[in-house]
Amino acid sequence: MYQDVRTYVVVNKSEEEVAPNDWYFNVVLRGAVTCGLPEEYCWHLFNHMHKLQQRHQEEKFRRSA
Figure 1 (cartoon, helix red, strand yellow):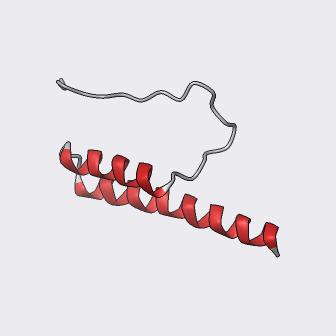
Figure 2 (spheres, rainbow, N blue to C red):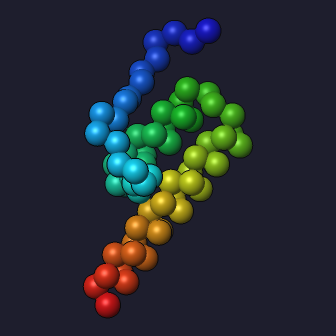
């Protein structure tokens, strides 16, 4: 059982997963670490969000080329 938790819900969801901006990336990761989630899960979360950001940057670069 968890106490003092916070949940965020996206109201108008996109069909594709969107890369988080740097501010939100840090909020999510800091929350995971300070809540005591397992280190392996925190790294998985970090890698997943980082890959989304990289993919977003690559797509942005392709569109501008």
